[in-house]
Image 1 (cartoon, one colour):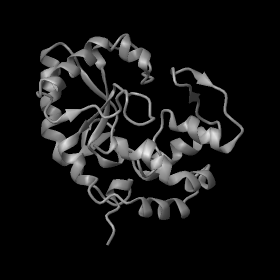
Image 2 (tube, one colour):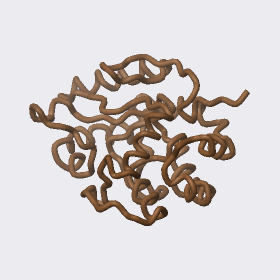
Image 3 (cartoon, one colour):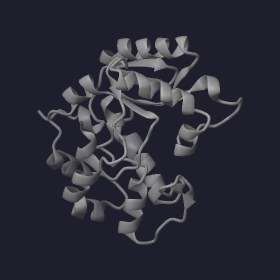
Image 4 (cartoon, one colour):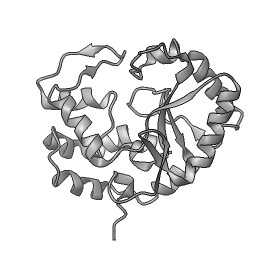
Length: 222
């Protein structure tokens, strides 16, 4: 039987780490350790996104395709919605993963900010400007821990020079666990899932799927 967990389907073993945010049970101890070290250094590791189902990622994708959610340019600014289907697909891919191929399906990846640096009432956007601004010290702390091998298995995967997705400093992944989840990922299975879905831009996604995998999926399955 096909393992559907890597695609955001099936029934993963999840634990609620912070209110409303669930992660794979196997990473909880390491994530708690990272949060405690962050706290000792004056930061509040706050989760902004964690596990997502296929349907959740599909909803994000479809709402962006329909113009119900904003599209952002490479610099993180709002842009007009392209009328050409292929251009629209690539515009969405600038900041959003393909449904079924998002690392958030694994339960091992989270988007994090420094809650202690957030002004009261501020709505986090998860943009490069935030990473370089109010959360700069927090991300420098994470970088130092990762480079010294003391980040409890967490690392960044969306980094400059890797694939075509723009760098996401806020996205961290527990690689020892995620690698196990990705061992049996199959592009053929993903294609079959798409064929049965109500995915926007489905025609062009299916036509371009092999090259999309080389540019937007496999570079981040590290």
